[in-house]
Image (cartoon, rainbow, N blue to C red; front, side, top):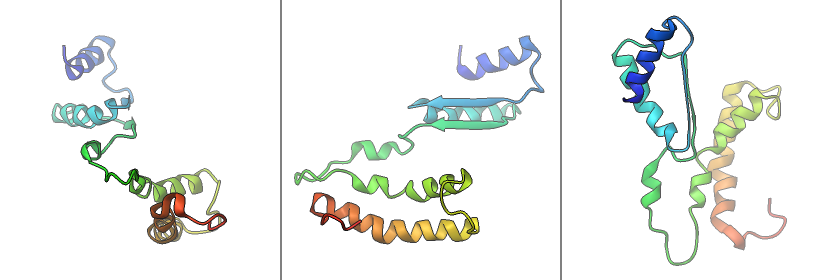
Length: 130
């Protein structure tokens, strides 16, 4: 039985068609949830939300060959940083008193400039440079 069929069957048997419906997936299931959500919507099963707790949302990165210099994929840490900054603002941990759009732009600018440059220096980053 497929996940989609299982969910449809459960909704029917339990009489939960009008209940809130969330998909929650971790690890590779975060990727599967995107497809499952699409399949459910094709059958007019509307979801309330999808939570993908996965660090591997872009599987193309798994196939990268890194240079023999021993440098790792530091650029992977650049992309999520503005999202982390926005989450921190929403949780009251930073960026208070700033409009969300302004805070997001400030985070993107910092990420593209200071943060990316520091990451690319790796262990050659001078002590106290941060």
